[in-house]
Image (cartoon, rainbow, N blue to C red):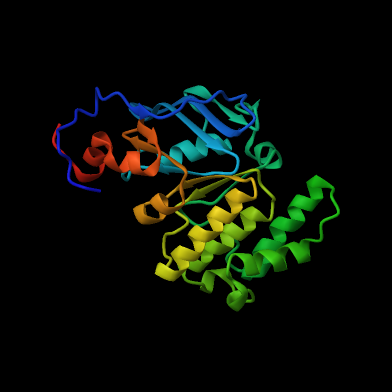
Length: 267
């Protein structure tokens, strides 16, 4: 991002939004509707609205402590908002526990890895495929699903290695494969590129684009700005819990409030 050409008061700045959506719009797979979260005297998220569309990769970016992971926790039901709603596939799921949201097509990865460390990469993905079959009651073959996803996320060479012995970047791909094994409609990825080298990051970006082209709504939190700008159709920017910009990548890069948030321009 270029150096800001003007000072910006982020407390009073009116966010740039290129489009608004109705949570009941069929193309809106996920809608975070005016969500706020307060922890005691700390306002972690303030009236945030985020839309993720089927068939697109949507970015949720911002400096450390902006409220991105808290927003993910609200979406998945791990955190209750002070106010606001979460819509999934045109249904209000705000009162549903995490497992019911998962069964409705929501999957996520975590900033801090959540994997079965003593299991192999393949067995992590196999476990998720077996869990899904237990409640979906379909005719899928979990072993076939695991084999296909191992290759798709690029883990064939380490599929029989214990996950706690893998580099962080590869362990994140295990978590991604496990999420995909549930066949989600909406996939939340919290810093999936962390720990990946350049080639692995490029492969991840290609995979995210492919997943979106297959109809999945992908919402990604990521500090790798180059990755975000390459793969995202639209980007939401959080700063101090507030959405300060929503738009296409080129518009977000040029937004003075975004530049101020990232580069520390004086108010």
